[in-house]
Amino acid sequence: MTPNRLAFDHTVIAALHLPDPVVQPGLSMAYLEDYVLTNAAVFAKAGIPAVKLQDQTRAAGPASLATVARTAALGRLIRREYPDLALGIIVQAHDAESPIAIAEACGAGFVRLKVYVGAVMSSEGQKSALCVAARAYRQAAGADGVAILADIHDRTSLPIGGVSQPQAAKWAVDMGADGLVITGTDFDDSLARIRALRTAGIKAPVLVGGGVDAGNIGRALAEAAGVVVSTSIMRRDAGPNDPLKWDLDQCRRLMEAAKG
Image 1 (cartoon, helix red, strand yellow):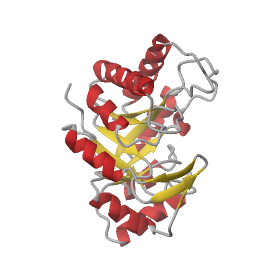
Image 2 (cartoon, helix red, strand yellow; image 1 turned 30 degrees about the vertical axis):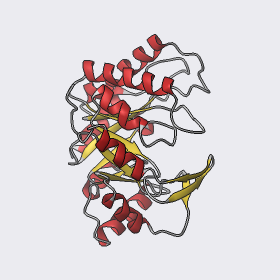
Image 3 (cartoon, helix red, strand yellow; image 1 turned 90 degrees about the vertical axis):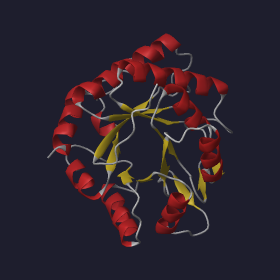
Image 4 (cartoon, one colour; image 1 turned 45 degrees about the vertical axis):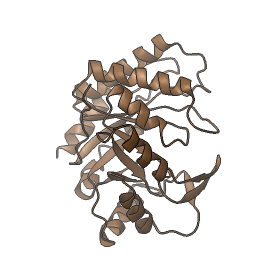
Protein backbone atom coordinates (compact mmCIF):
# COMPACT_ATOMS: atom_id res chain seq x y z
CA MET A 1 0.00 0.00 0.00
CA THR A 2 1.56 3.27 -1.14
CA PRO A 3 1.80 5.84 1.67
CA ASN A 4 -0.22 9.04 1.37
CA ARG A 5 2.59 11.56 1.94
CA LEU A 6 2.19 14.42 4.35
CA ALA A 7 2.04 17.82 2.68
CA PHE A 8 3.96 20.50 4.60
CA ASP A 9 1.63 23.22 3.35
CA HIS A 10 -0.58 24.60 6.11
CA THR A 11 -1.51 21.05 7.00
CA VAL A 12 -3.73 20.01 9.90
CA ILE A 13 -2.93 16.75 11.69
CA ALA A 14 -5.50 15.29 14.08
CA ALA A 15 -3.96 13.19 16.85
CA LEU A 16 -6.02 10.02 17.31
CA HIS A 17 -4.95 8.73 20.74
CA LEU A 18 -5.56 5.07 21.39
CA PRO A 19 -7.02 4.27 24.83
CA ASP A 20 -4.43 4.19 27.60
CA PRO A 21 -4.13 0.50 28.59
CA VAL A 22 -3.52 1.47 32.21
CA VAL A 23 -6.79 3.41 32.36
CA GLN A 24 -8.74 0.94 30.20
CA PRO A 25 -7.05 -2.46 30.48
CA GLY A 26 -8.09 -5.52 28.50
CA LEU A 27 -9.79 -3.85 25.54
CA SER A 28 -10.35 -6.27 22.70
CA MET A 29 -8.97 -5.80 19.21
CA ALA A 30 -12.54 -5.60 17.96
CA TYR A 31 -13.18 -2.64 20.28
CA LEU A 32 -10.01 -0.89 19.14
CA GLU A 33 -10.89 -1.42 15.48
CA ASP A 34 -14.32 0.14 16.07
CA TYR A 35 -12.66 2.94 18.04
CA VAL A 36 -10.19 3.97 15.34
CA LEU A 37 -12.70 3.72 12.48
CA THR A 38 -15.36 5.66 14.41
CA ASN A 39 -13.00 8.54 15.09
CA ALA A 40 -11.16 8.46 11.76
CA ALA A 41 -14.57 8.86 10.14
CA VAL A 42 -15.06 12.12 12.06
CA PHE A 43 -11.74 13.51 10.82
CA ALA A 44 -12.42 12.44 7.24
CA LYS A 45 -15.94 13.93 7.22
CA ALA A 46 -14.60 17.22 8.60
CA GLY A 47 -12.00 17.46 5.86
CA ILE A 48 -8.97 17.09 8.13
CA PRO A 49 -6.22 15.91 5.76
CA ALA A 50 -3.96 13.97 8.14
CA VAL A 51 -4.28 11.73 11.19
CA LYS A 52 -1.58 10.65 13.62
CA LEU A 53 -2.33 7.32 15.30
CA GLN A 54 -0.93 7.58 18.80
CA ASP A 55 -0.17 4.57 21.00
CA GLN A 56 -0.18 5.31 24.74
CA THR A 57 1.44 2.15 26.09
CA ARG A 58 4.24 3.16 28.46
CA ALA A 59 7.30 0.93 28.42
CA ALA A 60 10.65 1.03 30.19
CA GLY A 61 12.39 0.08 26.95
CA PRO A 62 11.36 -0.18 23.29
CA ALA A 63 7.76 -0.77 22.29
CA SER A 64 6.57 -4.32 22.90
CA LEU A 65 5.82 -6.75 20.08
CA ALA A 66 2.15 -6.50 21.06
CA THR A 67 2.23 -2.72 20.65
CA VAL A 68 3.92 -2.95 17.25
CA ALA A 69 1.51 -5.61 15.97
CA ARG A 70 -1.61 -3.89 17.30
CA THR A 71 -0.70 -0.41 16.07
CA ALA A 72 0.32 -1.68 12.62
CA ALA A 73 -2.96 -3.58 12.25
CA LEU A 74 -5.02 -0.56 13.31
CA GLY A 75 -3.03 1.73 11.04
CA ARG A 76 -3.57 -0.54 8.07
CA LEU A 77 -7.30 -0.58 8.82
CA ILE A 78 -7.39 3.24 8.70
CA ARG A 79 -5.41 3.26 5.45
CA ARG A 80 -7.79 0.77 3.87
CA GLU A 81 -10.98 2.55 4.91
CA TYR A 82 -9.72 6.14 4.50
CA PRO A 83 -6.99 6.07 1.85
CA ASP A 84 -7.14 9.83 1.29
CA LEU A 85 -5.99 10.55 4.85
CA ALA A 86 -2.26 11.06 5.33
CA LEU A 87 -1.46 8.72 8.20
CA GLY A 88 1.24 9.08 10.82
CA ILE A 89 2.46 6.94 13.73
CA ILE A 90 3.78 7.71 17.21
CA VAL A 91 4.40 5.30 20.09
CA GLN A 92 4.66 6.21 23.76
CA ALA A 93 7.80 4.13 24.26
CA HIS A 94 11.18 5.78 23.68
CA ASP A 95 11.89 3.84 20.49
CA ALA A 96 13.58 4.85 17.23
CA GLU A 97 12.73 1.81 15.14
CA SER A 98 9.22 0.60 16.02
CA PRO A 99 7.33 3.67 14.74
CA ILE A 100 9.10 3.40 11.37
CA ALA A 101 8.48 -0.36 11.24
CA ILE A 102 4.79 0.19 12.01
CA ALA A 103 4.55 2.92 9.39
CA GLU A 104 6.20 0.76 6.76
CA ALA A 105 3.90 -2.17 7.57
CA CYS A 106 0.65 -0.20 7.43
CA GLY A 107 1.42 2.31 4.71
CA ALA A 108 1.73 5.38 6.94
CA GLY A 109 3.57 8.34 5.47
CA PHE A 110 5.19 9.83 8.57
CA VAL A 111 6.25 9.22 12.15
CA ARG A 112 6.69 11.59 15.07
CA LEU A 113 9.75 11.00 17.23
CA LYS A 114 10.38 12.81 20.50
CA VAL A 115 13.91 13.36 21.84
CA TYR A 116 15.29 13.09 18.32
CA VAL A 117 18.54 14.86 19.21
CA GLY A 118 20.38 15.64 22.44
CA ALA A 119 19.19 14.32 25.78
CA VAL A 120 16.38 15.17 28.17
CA MET A 121 15.16 14.44 31.67
CA SER A 122 11.50 13.49 31.97
CA SER A 123 9.22 11.97 34.59
CA GLU A 124 10.31 8.57 33.23
CA GLY A 125 14.02 9.34 33.63
CA GLN A 126 16.78 10.38 31.25
CA LYS A 127 16.32 9.80 27.53
CA SER A 128 18.89 10.12 24.75
CA ALA A 129 18.72 10.95 21.07
CA LEU A 130 16.87 8.63 18.69
CA CYS A 131 18.25 10.18 15.51
CA VAL A 132 21.14 7.82 14.75
CA ALA A 133 19.10 4.63 15.19
CA ALA A 134 16.05 6.06 13.40
CA ARG A 135 18.01 7.25 10.40
CA ALA A 136 19.90 3.96 10.12
CA TYR A 137 16.76 1.86 10.44
CA ARG A 138 14.82 3.92 7.92
CA GLN A 139 17.60 3.41 5.39
CA ALA A 140 18.04 -0.30 6.15
CA ALA A 141 14.29 -0.94 5.91
CA GLY A 142 14.00 0.90 2.61
CA ALA A 143 11.46 3.19 4.26
CA ASP A 144 12.57 6.43 2.62
CA GLY A 145 8.89 7.21 1.98
CA VAL A 146 8.30 7.59 5.72
CA ALA A 147 8.90 11.18 6.79
CA ILE A 148 10.29 11.90 10.26
CA LEU A 149 8.75 14.70 12.33
CA ALA A 150 11.16 15.46 15.17
CA ASP A 151 10.09 17.18 18.38
CA ILE A 152 12.54 19.85 19.50
CA HIS A 153 12.55 20.44 23.28
CA ASP A 154 9.12 18.93 23.92
CA ARG A 155 7.32 20.55 26.86
CA THR A 156 6.96 17.22 28.71
CA SER A 157 10.71 17.05 29.40
CA LEU A 158 13.71 19.25 30.20
CA PRO A 159 16.73 19.39 27.85
CA ILE A 160 20.09 18.45 29.34
CA GLY A 161 23.29 20.30 28.57
CA GLY A 162 22.04 23.79 27.83
CA VAL A 163 21.64 23.24 24.07
CA SER A 164 19.54 26.00 22.55
CA GLN A 165 16.39 25.14 20.63
CA PRO A 166 17.75 26.56 17.34
CA GLN A 167 20.90 24.46 17.73
CA ALA A 168 18.86 21.33 18.46
CA ALA A 169 16.70 22.09 15.43
CA LYS A 170 19.78 22.37 13.22
CA TRP A 171 21.06 19.05 14.55
CA ALA A 172 17.71 17.41 13.82
CA VAL A 173 17.67 18.60 10.23
CA ASP A 174 21.27 17.51 9.75
CA MET A 175 20.31 14.08 11.12
CA GLY A 176 17.52 13.49 8.64
CA ALA A 177 14.39 15.05 10.13
CA ASP A 178 11.94 16.04 7.39
CA GLY A 179 9.98 18.36 9.65
CA LEU A 180 10.17 19.78 13.19
CA VAL A 181 7.53 19.98 15.92
CA ILE A 182 7.58 22.82 18.43
CA THR A 183 5.39 22.84 21.54
CA GLY A 184 5.96 25.69 23.94
CA THR A 185 4.53 26.30 27.39
CA ASP A 186 1.48 27.84 25.72
CA PHE A 187 0.34 28.80 22.22
CA ASP A 188 2.04 32.20 22.10
CA ASP A 189 5.27 30.67 23.38
CA SER A 190 5.13 28.09 20.57
CA LEU A 191 4.88 30.83 17.96
CA ALA A 192 7.72 32.78 19.58
CA ARG A 193 9.91 29.68 19.47
CA ILE A 194 9.11 29.13 15.79
CA ARG A 195 10.07 32.73 15.02
CA ALA A 196 13.35 32.17 16.85
CA LEU A 197 14.08 29.17 14.63
CA ARG A 198 13.43 31.21 11.51
CA THR A 199 15.65 34.01 12.78
CA ALA A 200 18.38 31.41 13.31
CA GLY A 201 18.07 30.34 9.66
CA ILE A 202 16.17 27.07 10.12
CA LYS A 203 14.33 26.49 6.83
CA ALA A 204 12.81 23.04 7.47
CA PRO A 205 9.01 22.81 7.87
CA VAL A 206 7.96 23.52 11.46
CA LEU A 207 4.65 22.46 12.98
CA VAL A 208 2.91 23.69 16.14
CA GLY A 209 2.59 20.65 18.40
CA GLY A 210 -0.20 21.73 20.75
CA GLY A 211 -2.53 24.42 22.05
CA VAL A 212 -4.25 24.93 18.69
CA ASP A 213 -7.99 25.55 18.39
CA ALA A 214 -10.45 27.16 15.99
CA GLY A 215 -9.75 30.56 17.50
CA ASN A 216 -6.00 30.60 16.90
CA ILE A 217 -5.35 28.20 14.03
CA GLY A 218 -5.22 31.09 11.57
CA ARG A 219 -2.34 32.64 13.50
CA ALA A 220 -0.62 29.27 13.73
CA LEU A 221 -0.78 28.58 10.00
CA ALA A 222 0.44 32.10 9.23
CA GLU A 223 3.75 31.21 10.89
CA ALA A 224 4.00 27.41 10.73
CA ALA A 225 3.87 24.74 8.05
CA GLY A 226 1.14 22.93 9.95
CA VAL A 227 -0.42 22.07 13.28
CA VAL A 228 -1.11 19.01 15.41
CA VAL A 229 -4.45 19.22 17.19
CA SER A 230 -6.53 16.97 19.43
CA THR A 231 -7.82 18.28 22.77
CA SER A 232 -9.71 21.27 21.38
CA ILE A 233 -11.74 19.09 18.99
CA MET A 234 -12.69 16.37 21.46
CA ARG A 235 -16.20 15.77 22.73
CA ARG A 236 -16.84 17.21 26.17
CA ASP A 237 -19.67 14.74 26.92
CA ALA A 238 -17.94 11.48 25.98
CA GLY A 239 -18.10 8.77 28.62
CA PRO A 240 -15.05 6.63 29.45
CA ASN A 241 -16.39 3.66 27.45
CA ASP A 242 -17.77 5.70 24.56
CA PRO A 243 -15.65 4.97 21.47
CA LEU A 244 -16.57 8.29 19.84
CA LYS A 245 -14.12 10.79 21.38
CA TRP A 246 -13.85 13.57 18.77
CA ASP A 247 -16.57 16.06 17.88
CA LEU A 248 -17.54 16.43 14.22
CA ASP A 249 -18.84 20.00 14.63
CA GLN A 250 -15.67 21.10 16.42
CA CYS A 251 -13.55 19.51 13.70
CA ARG A 252 -15.52 21.29 11.00
CA ARG A 253 -15.18 24.63 12.80
CA LEU A 254 -11.44 24.06 13.03
CA MET A 255 -11.13 23.38 9.30
CA GLU A 256 -13.32 26.35 8.40
CA ALA A 257 -11.07 28.58 10.49
CA ALA A 258 -7.97 27.00 8.93
CA LYS A 259 -9.22 27.88 5.46
CA GLY A 260 -9.73 31.47 6.54
